[in-house]
Length: 277
Image 1 (tube, rainbow, N blue to C red):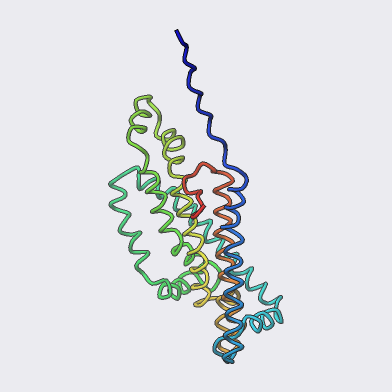
Image 2: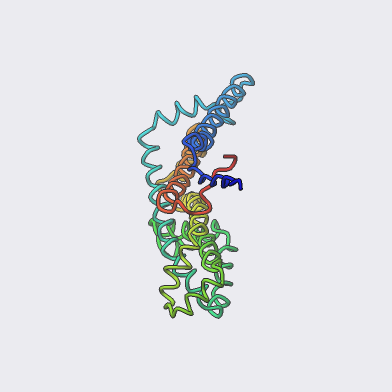
């Protein structure tokens, strides 16, 4: 009798090679940076070739020179806006997480509270800001409240959606094991909600920048929104464009900080993917 050799065992899949990690870094850092530089070069070329007046659309070089000429002033306004953004963002997290837990724990409370959440978003924040100034005074508190009102709603919805996304089999298993509501929340619902929570945080941090600037347009003596208003009033358009660019960079940097925090602390999250890699 002839003995046939057993088929070779399948080798386990290897971890992702370093080349793939380098490709992810290329897509996430190098390509956007090169695209941004190319956009500024085209902008500069169009302004020089067609001789666009600086009071309409200034060239990037002129924006840089005018902004750097008052660099210390611009830095002070940037820090004031960043302070408002971070305070509003932190307060929105402190409000959104327990509110989402309460909404998902009781359908009756959700039915009662949800219309009020929608009403807070249907009110134009520019119209609400002067009223808050009358109620709360001409300090930083109205600006923080406006920032919270702009940022917290998508965060509440994302967290609530994540808490309700747990497979019902796991909930039934935990209840059959007599797990408490707190244990079910901490060990099952919150881990499943992590991708949803960070998706909401990414949206909230971007909206916090918008909310802070809207508040500064109405009531502020410092901040990038205040700088844009005063610059355009005195026809210093390059400085206004510089403040606008700083705002966009601030939003991108804060967004990327949230992305990095998710990858560092929750690398298993399903949202940690890079398009095209």
